[in-house]
Image 1 (spheres, one colour):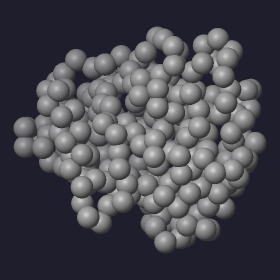
Image 2 (tube, helix red, strand yellow; image 1 turned 90 degrees about the vertical axis):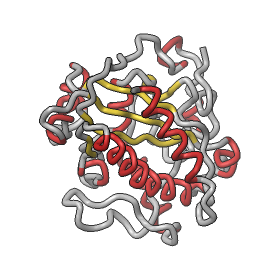
Image 3 (cartoon, helix red, strand yellow; image 1 turned 60 degrees about the horizontal axis):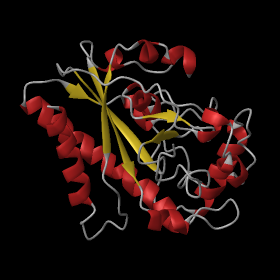
Image 4 (cartoon, helix red, strand yellow; image 1 turned 135 degrees about the horizontal axis):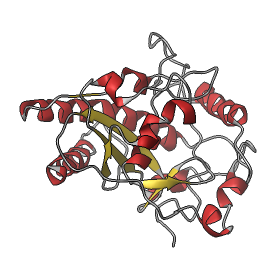
Length: 267
């Protein structure tokens, strides 16, 4: 079943990027299956925010969270290596096109699972973002970590075996399969042996340091880009889910496009 779902996700992404109205290209997705009741997931309300959702709040009999990572291409990443805190228009467009694709891909996988007799759904919190706390009530990356897909770098991105330059999404289901487990090996070079730290140097906002992360500084850059890139829409709504968070694309991405872990897991 894991192989079947993984193939469906990969085929959908490859087919979707062939549409004439889609500009973004993606690499082959990475897919993981987390235990919905894994201790790490059950602690997300403590680790992230007290309002963070749990799989059993989406489906009472949830057993698995399907997490998948869709990598961007190196060509796209190269467009965003320009100096300063303004992202490339290609990067902003890719952000919105990827989020829009996730909506359709999730619908497709959910429908497929339901046809096979399983329950499946997405968290309504996945499309919202709390602008006051600057934290998500549904962190795809944390579920992906629980699914053994990677470990967090000092750039706060989840580094997988194919890097961290891309985006994540999740689906909650009651599939009866053996879940994957979190990795024990550390993928972030700085956390592993004190080397690297390139993402800190590349952060135009000074939001990243070797000792912590300033959410306000990071979000200020994202908001600045949103004021510039209004032509692509806005993927996320406010906490109530009723209004867009901004007039445009809240992006940056400078901490993932020019680093050793952008497209590889460096041992």
